[in-house]
Image (cartoon, rainbow, N blue to C red; front, side, top):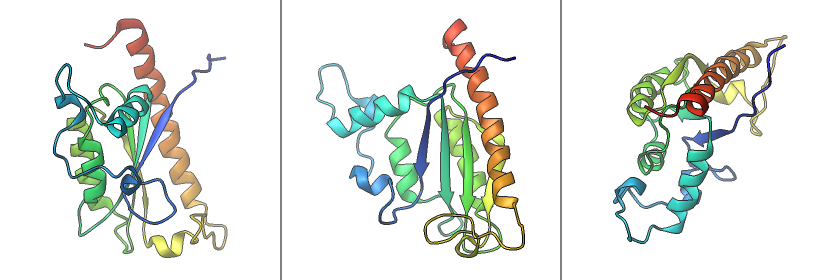
Length: 178
């Protein structure tokens, strides 16, 4: 039996809807100065310090990338661009849209974006088409006729992300970072 590894995940929401933890709650300004651009002795805003600690402590990230005008949500990229603590930790993409393409256009942009940040995305993408029909207003699956596609899509993403997170955590813990 394999040894269990405790993992920490951070979920980034790419939407600014009410009653969600989202980029708007952090009240970050448009990117003026990223966390890693502050020099020695400079005062770093507390919201940047606190958020960086959470990001740096994570073993993996889940990025919910709603599709906004065939692109990534600006609030998401603004939030993530403030930090550079993602290195050598995997990410998983959940994408959705109101239409039949399930947000895959934003997911493709997210892959490139996350790779540049140092958190490459796993191969599986969990995409949700016509999200207003797929989920209830509370975010629960609106299952009809035994459809388990949401569960199976989520399970596939979580399993793959966990596998990569364990592997990369072991490598960071034993060999350090390159």
